[in-house]
Image (spheres, one colour):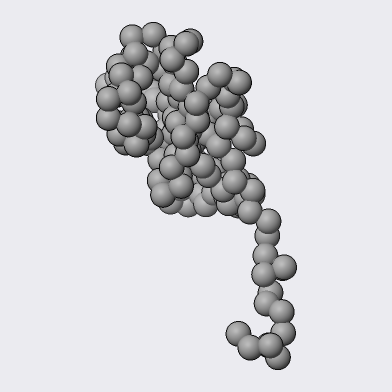
Length: 139
């Protein structure tokens, strides 16, 4: 872009509001295994392991329904947080209290847009109910 080119239309773009959703939270023995992995193989290995619990839209929908969506990573002052920008995950863990949490980023503006669009009727049968069943056999 040269100096005579007018300003781009980026100012007209919608603001991107990235939020965090809970993928998995573990405590007790389950968390102890992951905490050991963090100590021995690093946080990246733990993130890769815990990402198995991310089922895409299903995980996102469950987080939205259950209220596990946050403006920032939920953590206590004693938590250690590792963000993996490449994968979009954040790992929050605490050896003292024995828990680990994997969170994923998502664009809530896109989610709001999806919710505002009405779903199409399924095969055009949206007004039809189930077929009525007759009581018994008629001869």
